[in-house]
Image 1 (cartoon, rainbow, N blue to C red):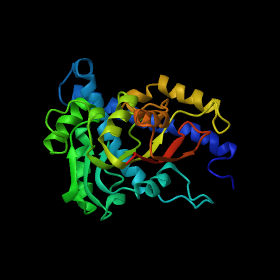
Image 2 (image 1 turned 90 degrees about the vertical axis):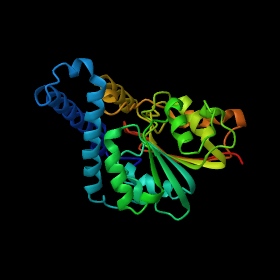
Image 3 (image 1 turned 30 degrees about the vertical axis):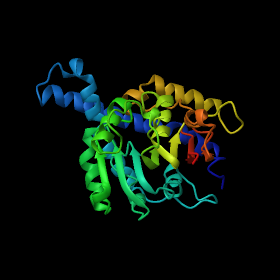
Length: 301
């Protein structure tokens, strides 16, 4: 059997087509929500005057459905590496979480079962999609972390996150820029399939770095641009990524982008301090249009 980094031709072709199923699924929710707005709610002009609101509603409903479907999938057969799909990368990375934790874009709380460690004192989940909050709260309660899980109704953009953290007493009054904080606020920051959708990747990386305490760590599991210029990449997969972008991937999938070099942005965030104390990152699924990086970035003490 071929390893996941060296798939058979059939597996490789299937991996290139798999995102199309997700895209069509998300599109169906977009159509459904727009039709409901016009014919059920009588909001005839909503698709023209409030496309952003309807898009957010459609994505929220789609993501809840998608998350439920993912959680109900049976485990894949074991492989020599122990990694069959991207979700297999998450548990060993999140096992490093400790102290005060910022959970960036937790969605419906799919990773909640991995955050029950007694080493974690409190978790703050920055989730801008209000349609996911009820599911997120329910999941936190069900996993026994409800008392220490706090939902922040915001994105990681400084204009939203700074006031939310100040309200929680985690940042001093007068703070305006996250990348200028001194001493940081968090011991651990979780980034799982979320940096693909932040508006400004480089600025977000600097902001998250600024929020880390000395010795703190960013735990990352993110899909990235295909490394087609390297031996482990694929120019065909990179072209397919561009095709999905042309078909509206970002619009329908919550601003997700397939063309981001997330590792480069995170490494660059620490340049002013001479780099990270340590970076342990592995690359996976390099020949597909959903290649991943997974690992730990530790800030200098």
